[in-house]
Each structure stands twice: as structure tokens, then as C-alpha cells.
Length: 108
Image 1 (cartoon, rainbow, N blue to C red):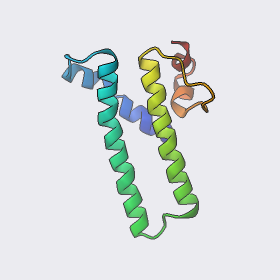
Image 2: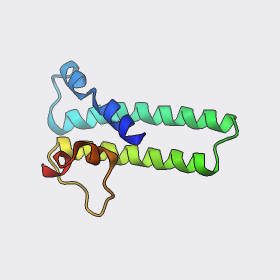
Image 3: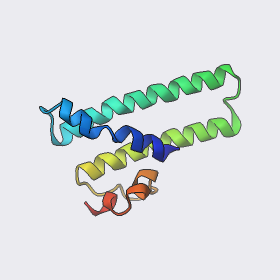
Image 4: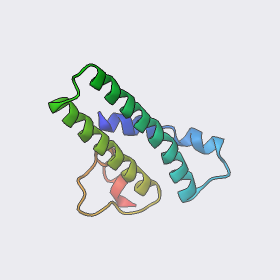
């Protein structure tokens, strides 16, 4: 699930870049990730509210929610580092994003 969220959100980078030709490098990536990251956070927040209203946001559902949110955040950071040619963070679990792109995420 986290992998699909990260890939879906980051898949809009080319379109964002075309709409913001004044941005490049780190400013482009940070601006883009601020936009998609805020959208994803809003979606997670809304999902949490719905689950709480249904009185099912506990136990395994809450654990999976938090784990997925954390993996998405790590995936965004892995994407940022890969786009900027930075090495992956040490001592960090391989994210779904890094697994999905293979060594591309760690070679730069």
C-alpha cells in the first residue's frame, strides 16, 4: 500500500516541473514533496477521522495505519534523496520505494 501511494504521488513530478519551470534541483524537489506530502497527510487524516467515527480505529487497523503512514514518509525521503543524488540514510530500513526502483535509489 505505501509503495503505491509513494509511486502514485511521485509520478506527478514531471507535470509539476513543467508547471514550475522557475524551480530546479533541491527547490523543485522540496516544493513538489511539500505539495504531494501535504495532500497525502490530508488523505491520511481524513481516513483516520472516518475510521474513528466508525469506531474501528484501534488494534491492528490503527497499527497498520501508523505503519503505512511511516513507510510513506520514508518513501518520500528516499525519493527525495534519489532525485538529488544523495546516498540513502544509513541504518534505515529499506523502503518500499527503494525496493521498487531497485539499485537506482541507492546508486546515485
